[in-house]
Image (tube, rainbow, N blue to C red; front, side):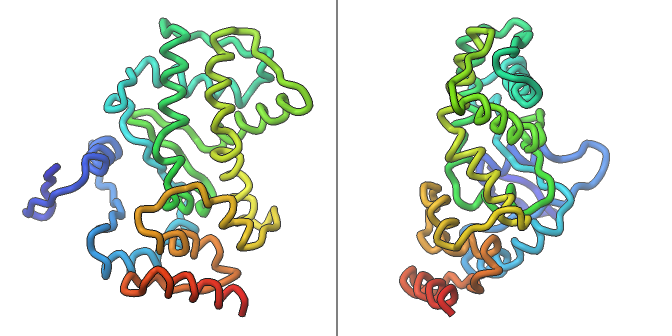
Length: 258
């Protein structure tokens, strides 16, 4: 998709175009930080700044894409986020949400789209959710504080152990089952990493790599580079895309050992 900037036209991905369109402010300037993924030199420089930028931010806006492009209507997306808000507040057996015309099948479908979003699978997204003190998920024109999602997950874990608890509403049970299927690897995993970064939980570098191993990166070198900021207390590896994968992995191992 083409965009105009400083009198010139630049091609951008559909996802970035959607983010720029939805996150811009109508009446004031909003600065956005975008990295050119196709330029290894620029990427090497900018990735080295990630830890400081994310850690010094008051709040990070996490882009989940536009729900309209994902086949979800405004009312369905709103019902999904309201369900998560309700889950964060109440015991599942008490949950009964006003779906405002959204049937159970569509609510479950919308929850599935939210919880199976590609964002949960990507390795690079960890720093933007782990390092800042606060984060807000932006899903199209709607938003939800990360604390809400984390609290919803915490409530589910507490009610699933020692026994599984069902909601009073059968429609809610369908949405809960979708949420549960992504609970540990997604929400709880991020919760533990945030606690690790904030000094509230102890983890070794090996455990961090293990917890994030299922997440994907197009470039295998990013298995190290994407976590360098998070693991900065354990090792220092400067981002350099002129190095081979083997060289990057060896540097990381030597730095951890030393």
